[in-house]
Image 1: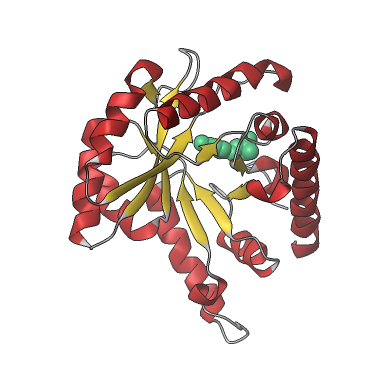
Image 2: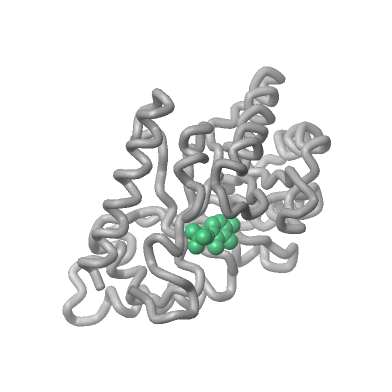
Length: 245
Ligand SMILES: *Cc1c(COP(=O)(O)O)cnc(C)c1O
């Protein structure tokens, strides 16, 4: 499993580098988030062992259980390091319900899917209770066809302003999930639009360095358009629900 994962991850990094250079960017401006939703704990441990550090999960509950398994595996007699020793960074990339914010702030380094004032308030409160400043991204909805989550682009600045005054949240950028196109070239306009929204927000005084966009079939286009985080699952771990790599 490790050999196969290692090759897949290396291939993705190579493709990221090529795309970055095509766009005149530095390859190390782009962080690869390995999406491990529906991927078993042992594959996450293998990815940690070969050096992958950023991981994306969709569901809080699924991840909480998996994290326990991962800890258990690392604590086994042959384990050489504790989880903390690896310094992993856990990203929540799926929709978050307001009643799960307590668990989410305990588990995740960066939450990509904040899309309403109510959710931001709940997160701010939960983070405050554990004395944490929770890093977040604002999820923006750029079309009607895409996932039903994300704030409408017209309302992004207002949400940024509101979140900006919440003590226990720190917004670091924006994220989007565009519609699926057979031809990844067709998605370019969405990635560009997210970047422009970010750039306009920065002219209004917000600091939003992170652009989370691009998945297995379109991350190269996303990198050309400025992505700083790409979220890749299938191209690393294989099709979800089928036999894992
Ligand atoms: C599942 C998922 C991904 C990864 O998708 P792949 O096509 O498997 O690379 C990325 N982002 C989000 C929000 C996801 O839910």
